[in-house]
Image (cartoon, rainbow, N blue to C red; front, top):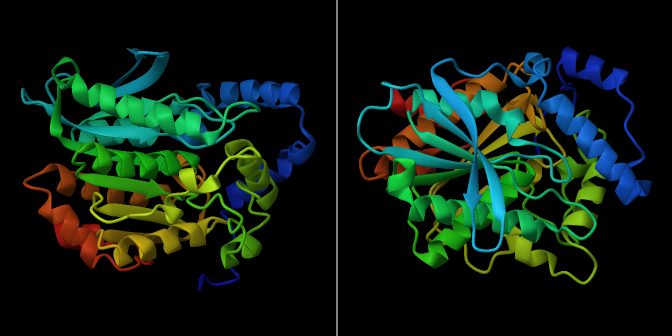
Length: 354
């Protein structure tokens, strides 16, 4: 399905950084080695030095950790709010965010985009520090964390200062799977979401997961390889698990979902996952906009210090969510319905809002 130019290359900074790093042997890692890798990597991602790569938070937003007390467990979330005086006195929209990484990752790596969303929309952004994949912890655990966090915050809207009628979900990579599944659960639960934003999503964990042209074209991408995806899939859907239960692409019914913005970096093995999901959503009657970013790599939204396409993507997401959170939500629906693939710097969302 991909029609990207084969001569595109990742940004020079990304290639240099990748050349300096030595990846582990992903498919032979023991559980102990995976734990050690995760701890070290998440420590790097949460460090102040990493801000050079992951971006500096927006100064007009506050950031802090909070704990959700759920019936069967406690769950950490990272909460972003507009600085005092910038949100007004009314309840704010809620954006439930899920970070990427799968078997690694932390909400801190998304401080840049989430703080900008909180301060610029304005909105309350709640990013879920979900359970990470590991032997014995499948993707369904992360999906439960995402959905339970969303439902908890909405049910306690007064306590959080949010408007329960203006809610959106936003996920990146593995987190986009969780967000897409939450959007489906919300429809079944009767929670009317205003929007869903899925950035470089992995939506197919079945036996066809690797049967896409982009998988072979970008199998050795510097930020995500086919080998890493194989480890992700092994952990996400252990033997004996039905992979369709965590594969939004194979959901029985994709109609009646919140309007979707699907953001696709073109130099990503998962690029065709996003493109195919947009097609499925549209076929089901759910408004969906595809926004492609030529020359961008997987996880580019979490690496604005390396990839210049991250900033226009952030603007695109902000405008889409702003449209969704205002009025009766019709603007976001129109955006998604009108949004053909955006490959030039000006997105369909920006064009509509000018």
